[in-house]
Structure formats: structure tokens, C-alpha cells
Image 1 (tube, rainbow, N blue to C red):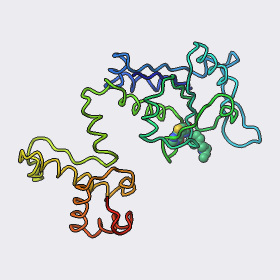
Image 2 (cartoon, rainbow, N blue to C red; image 1 turned 60 degrees about the vertical axis):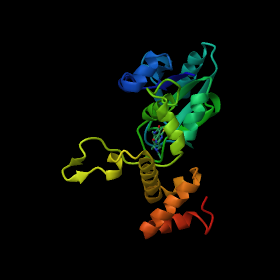
Image 3 (cartoon, helix red, strand yellow; image 1 turned 135 degrees about the horizontal axis):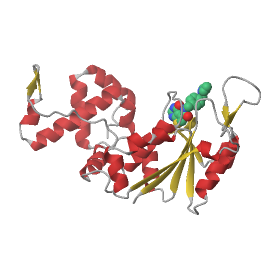
Image 4 (cartoon, rainbow, N blue to C red; image 1 turned 90 degrees about the vertical axis):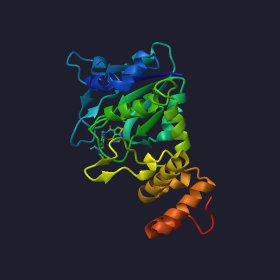
Length: 263
Ligand code: 9D3
């Protein structure tokens, strides 16, 4: 399984640094990831290469014209390959891990059209786009970082991209909880000690400690995640333990679960 992405942007230079390093670079070299970047300005109709214009109805800012986008998308699609065409915009459906998994299984190349702050002619949605995606409720200046975020999260799901296949397996085991805390040498630094259990060599105890801390952090910081998480009998015992150690935890867990519905 591999993935191909086409990016249509006014700022093609923004992509080389990120995609040219580390895991994204290795994935490309191994033929698992292919990203092509296209400059919308190359598809402008005039010698001044103008791609925006004043908004109908007035108001501040400029609007990305539809015709350069139309020419660009049709030129990109003219290689005969099917594509999923995605507009990146703050109005899109929220991106999440499930969507990353869907895109990792997508057979077609995915074409990202990057919006910009000023706005984009609305007809792009009707004429050129299959779906619209946002990466979160905060304002960026354009869709370029969103494209990189999505490509990064999809690429790491492709078989062979991450060094050890364990990472993905452990992730599905962790199943929607926040991560447990990590430590490495030295055992004490500036008076702060590594928890004794991690130095004990008792692998059952270590696994239980990690699961407990993952559950603690999830309950503390992202209680909503626990609703979707797959919890075992043992998890419920651990949650009971956390609740008896800390009444704040108890309130958080109670609010999420009607009495006696644990597991
Ligand atoms: C005056 C502009 N805003 C009025 C509410 C709208 C707006 C349009 C375009 C705000 C930001 C942008 C640029 N952002 C994106 O193109 C974008 C984005 C984002 O800003 N946040 C989260 N995900 C995405 S995906 C594309």
C-alpha cells in the first residue's frame, strides 16, 4: 500500500522542507509516498499571472478566481488517473485519526486544493471538489499546513513507513487513550526520579503502571476520549483505583458513566 498526493497551492516552496526530511523523506525514497506540488499561478490566464480578484458585493480582501483553479485541476487530472479532490478550508469536516485511516486506504491519488485567508470562489466546491476538510478550530493563513498535517498522519499509517511495525500495533492496543509517561537515563535528574516500577524489571507491573497512567491522563485531560476507548475488565479495576485515590477523577468518571455501567 502506498499513497499519492497532489497539492495545488500559491506557495509551492512551503512543502519541500517538511517532505524532504526524516520519515516523509524516507517514505518517498522507498516509493511508499509520492507528493507532487503544483503552483496555481502557473494556470493563470494572463501574462501577469493574476489568480485573484475583488469580491462581488464588495468588502475587504481578494478572492481566488475559479478559472485558474479549474484549469489547474483539469490539467492535473489529465494524466488519466482517478483522484479524490479535497478542498482544505476552515468550513470543512474536522480531520481526525479515523479520517487519516480512511485516506491511508484510499486507492486514488488525493488532490488537495489549498485555500487562502482571503477566500476562494465558492463555485470551486460545486465544480472541482469531492469533500472539504478542516484540521481544527483555529485560524491559519491558508491550507498548506493542513495538507502537510494530513499527509504526515496518513503516511505514517502506510505499511513500511515507520521503522518498526510495533508502533502501529501498540497504537491499536492503546486504542484511543492518551500516551503514558516515558523516561530514559539517568534514573535521577535535578532531584526528579524515574518511577521505581520502571527500574524494577517486573514487566507485568510495568505494563499495569503504564496502562494506569494512560487512563489517569485520559480521565484528567480528555475524559471524552474514554467514551470511544475499548476498556477491559482490568481497565475498570484500574479506574476504580484512580477514583478511590482522587475524588476529582471520581467526578469525571461518574459524569461519563451512569451508575454500574462500567465495562
Ligand atoms: C476572513 C477569513 N475568515 C473569516 C472567518 C475565514 C478564513 C478563510 C481562510 C480563515 C482562514 C482561512 C485560511 N485557512 C485555511 O485555508 C484552512 C484552515 C484553517 O484556517 N484552520 C483549520 N484548518 C484549515 S484547512 C484550511
